[in-house]
Image (cartoon, rainbow, N blue to C red; front, side, top):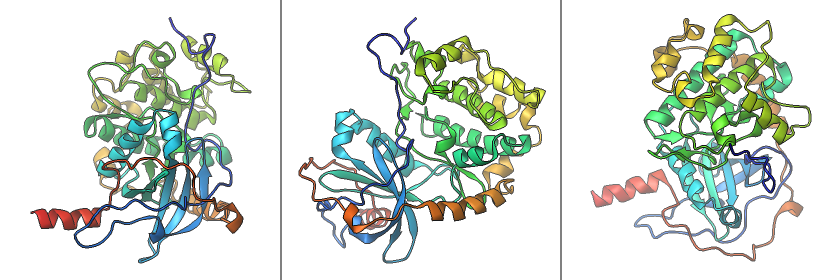
Length: 372
């Protein structure tokens, strides 16, 4: 059985927003435009930068305002050279596809996309209530009724990804679960997502504590990895920490704990919750709850008081609404200001334009009307 800790291999990760630090503002190279019958597509100059939300290995995320209407968005900036160096060009398009195509209320929506000679930009909904990681860091373990509500919304998001978009998320974790100002969830960061195909994927992708056994073993994986990560997430939400971890986050130790698959449950975790987690953390992917049908997952006793239909239609109030309101204030206060001395020089490296990357729904509608 293969293991990612074999000689010569290196620890994986890999999220674009693991570490927050002050970073540069927008690239100043010219925005690449496409010909338009009526007006140009939106570009970097149409937005005012309000501050840095976060920066990671593959890009930065800013809070921005569209100058013509005052609308607030989040903008993800990715360097083309970084994408090329890590063979992530296809991943970049896949993330664009998910964000643009999704009509699920529990997934962040793409509003615009454009590029310069050296960078790509995603303009998305700005989700003001912070993320679940912030909530867990401040509060530790959450009450079961709160976990039940949030997990039910996450299940609806995963169901949409699997059944409607045919996408495996592969990066479910607290940092990627945003909260709206009313306390509802939105999944973000699809940089590790992949298509559901007939054959298995052998790509090593994910966060160490959340890796499924089949990813560690390199035996091939498909959509069932999302049910494993859901089990890890539920455990962490109820306990305040992941089931398979160690103090210094040693990747090899974490992987060995995952392969042993012997989580220790707090007596505070109910029998229904424990049964749900253990049903998701099955070593055999085909035996995981939800692998056959999302209805099997929704019918579990843990969710017996959840009306999934009403939840999908936004008819239920979130138990985290007050927390999300507080997070909104804290998130505004924690934005890193952009200073003139942080502004980069024109990039000496110019990359070829990426075909069919730009997206402006208003202009696209105009073109469609002309062609119709």
